[in-house]
Amino acid sequence: MKKVLISTTLTLTLGLSTMAVPTIQPTTVSAATLNPYNNQVAVNAKADQLIKTAKSLIGKATYSTKEYKSTYPYKFSCATFIDYVFKQNGVDLATYNEDYMMEQGYYVPRSELQKGDLVLFRSNKKTGTLPDHVGMYIGDNKIIHMADSKQNIVISDMNSKPYYTESYLTARRVLPSLLPANPATKGDNIVSQAYGLMNKVTMSSTNNEQSMKFNGPGFVNYVYKNNGVNLGTTDIKQLMNKGTTVSKANLKKGDLIFFGSNNPSMVAIYAGDHRIIIPSSSKIQTRVLFVDYYKQNYITAKRVFTEKAVKDITTNVSTPKASESTPKVNESTSKADQGTPKSNESTPKANESTPKVNESTPKADQNTPKANENTTKADAIVNFASNLMGKAKFGYTYNESNLTFTGGGFTYYVFKQHGIDLKSKMTAQQALEGKKVLKSNLQKGDLIYFSTNNKGTKITQSGIYIGSNQYIMLSTNGQVVKDSLSSTWSVKNYVTARRAL
Image 1 (cartoon, rainbow, N blue to C red):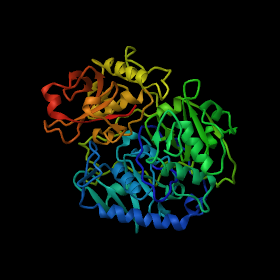
Image 2: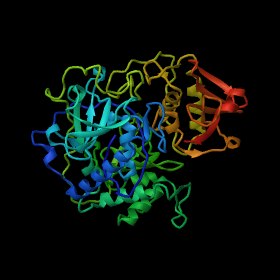
Image 3: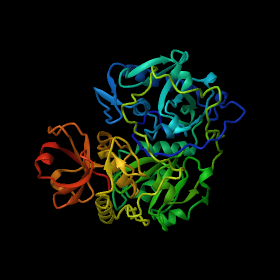
Image 4: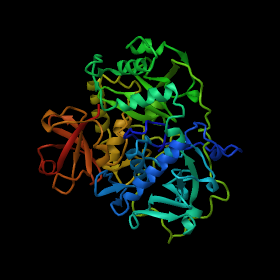
């Protein structure tokens, strides 16, 4: 869940999905001894800030893979804890997924760990080379992490129990690439300004700089103009004709990326380390290129300015060394509560041969509607969800191959098939996405969030509004069902609604 840079005063929230990590061996020259961004002073200062924030949460948060709560009393999984700590200090990790965290920054040998490095573990051997736990190194051979449901946030010496040696997988140094280089490049400045404007602009069908209202291409044009790059157009097709084409493997901060089914419907600013800043019809958001929609609908990328490139060593993804990967963890050692399902458990990985669902299982329309075709997309979402009746089933896991989900996993899956990343399979965290909608103003495709204790306060279930005062959801009783918002259960448990389209 890490990524490249962001201004040190910026706070963001971003999203999630799953994908396997390529097993590329680290280079023979230790990357840990290098900082290609020349920003080590800033890295050291930021690491101290991260550690201070993480320590301040000891005794104030409990372990949960089902609920994310970013206010006291806090609730985190191991990965959401790390993401929260980084986010509170202006660093964008872009995902709550340990798999993605292992894709970011660059490999660090265990013997050369520094404060702020991410340390990843694999206690469940069924995940292969993928991590199922993450902590942050704080110095003196110690990490701070959300350990499990019994210990919560703790500081652990990595020699204190067999778990920390037997399940150790790898470590990644993410801070140098997450922060601006020294000196900052034009790409750094573009990305930092785009981040800084995320919550200050209003998305619109027209462009007005005075009122800070833009459509997607208009926002891009505005940011680049402020950084001395005159794109001269707010037309997405004309934008795609600008600059020089750059391959996906050679993307650099500030490059423009175009998505769509044949013609471009969305343009994003590449933020480095697989992250993008992408304007939608409702807001500016950040995502990672690993998400299926962005992989499947990627058209091209363009470089519209030049500058001296910073040496890049961030692609050296490590695999565990023989000395780092030892037999299965002792059952008595500290590990995430095995009785609690992991958020990424059983999730098919992008490069695996995922079994096909029954041929009758609905597939998302190959020609995903453009961002402004919300009515059509809402219809497609509702139809797709309805076609899962009798096929999807409830379970405390996320498995696309056999269509087993929690309620939040179900809505995540349905929206994912239509190019919308809700960033989390946890309902409480999902409910932070999009714009709040009054119950009286619900539209087809809106997300509806419920409690399950008949109090209508704590979000633990989600559904999709389908029109005519009806909604569809995956019930804890096991099946996809439709119900009325006027039913006794719905009235007692309704909490809020959000518009993500």
